[in-house]
Length: 296
Image (tube, rainbow, N blue to C red):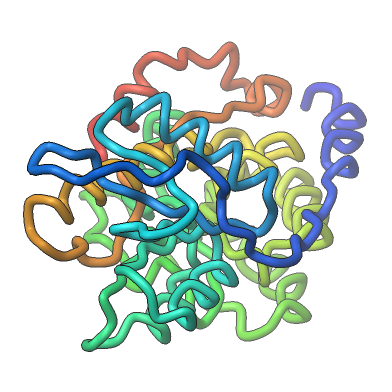
């Protein structure tokens, strides 16, 4: 065991995210005339003006002249986060795409008569599992902790010699007991993104407990990696903008939004200190990034 005290300090540094208020519409370019080749006119809703501006910059950098961001008379609306998605749907305006929306909320809000769809919050199980197998090829018993309405609804078929066990945590107060019960049975732990279950306090509990048991954690996001997970696929703002661009282009071709799903664009986060503590470092990032490029 290397520098356990250093890892513990990393774990204790995790901080919970602050809730944002409101859902302002991005103020952008003035209206322009339409034509057969005119760019799609988009309105962006977000929890704050700063978030809307940052997302708009990322989208402009990717989409170029194919999209135009406007403050009124939009063809389509992009709504960043659950509350902005709810607000945009309540406004009964143009078709809406929710971005980084928890899957449970998306299931409730997307109805048969809704001109809407959503990019779910988080990363697919298959993607995180592929990272775990590349990082920990000797791990045979993989545990998964998830909430009752997790974005990970079903388990993939386990390859020969590998077992996957999903344990449902009925409420956050049960997390500690379930960790103590199941961690000794697992070689590695895989976590989905679920802010209600895996908040800042849970991060400290999960990561310290798993480290003491010598069970590496993969997932669920970049914050957990900074706090003590070995690695994770994550959705950065540029990844979300790429997902939005793809969905808008699909809407142009199909006349409707694609079905709800994951972003399909992911970035890699690795904690080299933690990887070293498990004798995994230095981590070769290139094959891991190729895994992310190859997963939907």
